[in-house]
Length: 287
View (tube, rainbow, N blue to C red):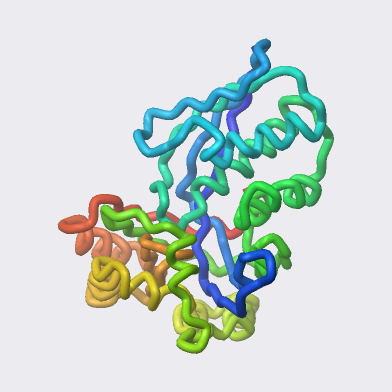
């Protein structure tokens, strides 16, 4: 049986702007996203049987059509008339329902892995286009690196990576439904981040500029629904983080920190009341 292993890195949103509601029910967004070196690992094995099998020791990971990796495998099998099945063993390191695109990254890794496993010969751009049918963040996760994402997240413009720094990620015990957060958005109350200023700061490798232009139009909505997210933000700032923002629809909050010693101070400040805390680096570049 042929088996390959694929990494699925998490992403954070340096900016997330909501521009309006679309006719298809989604929201029009503009985001600056970058990958961080917290990754799931997927092992894909070709099966003789005509099935998709998902295996994970994580209690909250579905093993059926609710799983985006399952949907990605199903899409490729149908599109390219693949008769063999595939088993996907998921080693989950990225927290679930966290705003870090763990499920989307697993789907992207499945697309890349099956492309190799079944010799489909698709380019990353072609895989990203297919990924858009699976989920809004899947296209970005296929490409990796750093990008401005528009539309519902599937229109990508690659930009340089931010300068290297530490990222402290903290997820409270709650999970957040992206759909619920978007439903609660009131367009007239949104505080729009300055995406252009963020992109300029990244291009100039201006770490202080990046920290001062962090912004997420969904943050106020999630903070109102979940006060514990605000507590994480305040703790990070109190411990000396250079820049703090909620990622995606939450509830994970990240801190950007230039120096390792301070990163560990922020980490230690959170360990008392937050069950999932990680110190990682900005990956930025493609995997």
